[in-house]
Length: 465
Image (cartoon, rainbow, N blue to C red; front, side, top):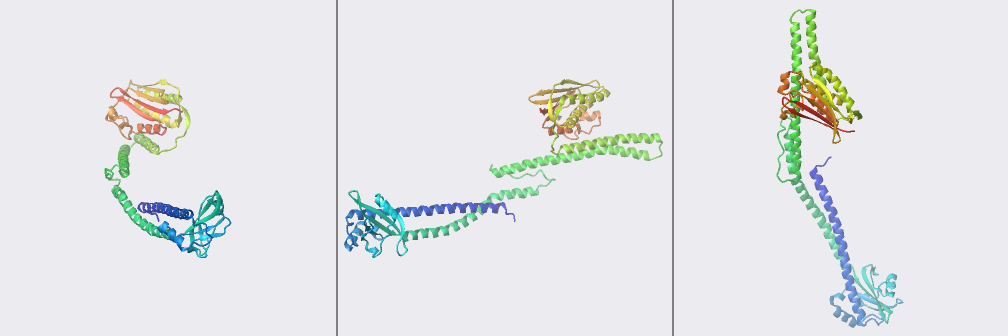
């Protein structure tokens, strides 16, 4: 089962806190143990120096009550739980505390070696009863010679009891702190994600028919506000896309309805009475023109639909100069029928990568559009230039032109300006959108400049190969 973000945040927070607490507790326990050992060692060294310096290190028997009582008076509480013994360099026992009775403190080989070098040794050993003891072995020298070894010890029972109680405290406080932290983490996660829940509820209420609704901003400028701004921007793009789709659907239906209505009317009129073969031929010819217009419109719609989906363009080297000459030859025949001159004004060598058929279609659409809206006696010029590492194909006409405010609108599907509709050229307004989509798939741009009544210039810019 997939856990919610709130639960995962709480679990992650708890796991990280548990790791931190375990590490800190381990370090603090080790530090406390080290400090306790340092304090014990310092206390043992103080007692050992007093015993060494008092002169009671020459007797070979256990100290009497008098000397030991004197040590207690000198050291006070420092001596109450400590005991000592003296041994000679050969290991023979000398004076020792009455606390030891018949017991002998162990003398390790390491302590003996250190003493021979005049170095004191701190170590933890076991007494005969199994009790751990912290032991100091202190060498006593006279005239540079080792004469005795003084061993001072203290039981570790109290230190271990202190460490045990500290460990018990940690074992109680860590789970308690972890539980409180988990509860606090859950509250923090719930509070932090509450705006996200509000955004989710708002987003669920937004549908395709109500894309004008927006997620509220809290005004804090934090990540959640950035998320809301991003989602609002996405909703704005979706609203625009839905509007364009509805507009496209309505325009397509309108463009399809006109020839279909004309085709239906022609056929109905022909079927109202008996007609001669010649009359039926005229009806079929007229109907065929409408059918051809529908076929062209359907093909353009299919092409525009395919171009709107990102696809891998065939990559081959294309010489634009021959392509432009080929387009100019085809366009010249159409232009002559309309009394328009079509020429190639400039043709610089340029090579691009892409699909030659698609690029030829894009340039042809621009030339056909220029010829269509150029009055008889006008002129259409094609030019191929290279500038700033890009190939530029410019199509300039001396046609009707358009208002600069309408320049971008003409690249939307089915958009035909009033001046174009007045000429009744029979177009559906798909040529320029198709041309721009083809150029865009090749990584280029298509822009237009126009002056009302003076003509227009459409420029394709493509990256050079």
